[in-house]
View 1: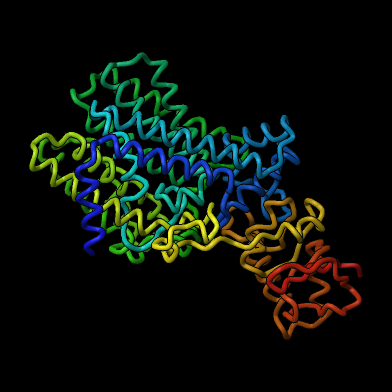
View 2: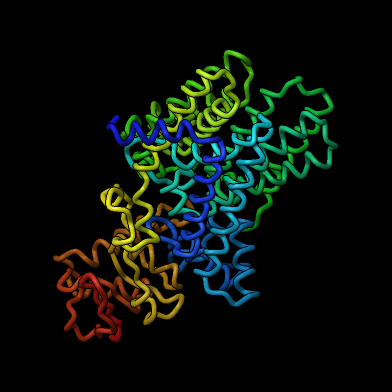
Length: 503
């Protein structure tokens, strides 16, 4: 470790435990700025499109990305509630997304705190847990929805995955108390409804929630009575029944979904570089397991690791989405063990090592400052920190295109951002289990932009899919700008041109 970093680590180790609270407050302010800024790099366009469709037709919204009447797993109780809020208030879709981000952040903050307090009365543990959840990953940047690292969370605050993960933490905390205090049957039924909400709002986080519930139940001390297990069974029945009757899509048809493994392959790449700091948490889990062979955090980690490993070994990389079930127990275990350390030498050593890991994690993710600060406002030593680049916006094109009109484009970013403003695209940006002609639409888009495709075939594709607008790079393939079937409507940054189909 370089001398300056070593000196900083020792200084942090000598600070009172309240320093962790101060650090969490500063990170909290940063995340609130992300709510306002709403940095765009990822699936924000999809979630904006979902709100646009629901606001246009709450009962029959159709496909969120293409002009087809199909169901979609993105139509969840949470997105329906957000669309209703937008319709009642008149707020724009992006204002509603900021409301979603603020709600998700509040649920996650309170949920982590509530869950940690079921394990320890040490006040410092909650602040340390938040620092570990945000910063304890690795030396290589990683961002994915459902994984609440600082960079990832900055980009996914408005996503249903954040809302669902916040609900999951509350579910685990309430379930621990319900089992320990033998709550009444009605309370367990409400917990079953809460789990159903998580499953419907974000199916991958729902899998993590189920693993957490299993770990809480198997790790309960004393072992639950027969009456408690009956109440748990009733709650489980509710959790299965509500998704079964949800009208917007068939939840259980997702269990056999194919085509998701390729896009999840990166979850198994560069694992050491991305998550090496979590090894400290694994050591903490080992200490807990030695004291209690049914420790819920250790069981949670074991279940998550098994699911993640099976996905990698079997080629079902979509199973890698249980990754939070591996990371979160280790991060929380380290926070609790650090806060509860009493022996002077052990306490100093554990605090120093944890502080060093958090500093490394903070530097790795310091690039998030560029999302809310000008370059000259970022401290010089942090300006070169790695970051996930933000995406270009296509609001300039959407301003010309009416909502629910169809645009032909093959640009990676345009496909993923334009639908957030209301238009459709010919091909969907993401795999869609419920869209029967998905492959045909992708092939049509490829053929339209293929250099050798005849003009008549291109015109036929535009007619078949009701295309009234074409977005492409200047000089790119497709019908040329001088073609009598097209009229130039707008030019945008990056050499893009929006063309209206007039013939």
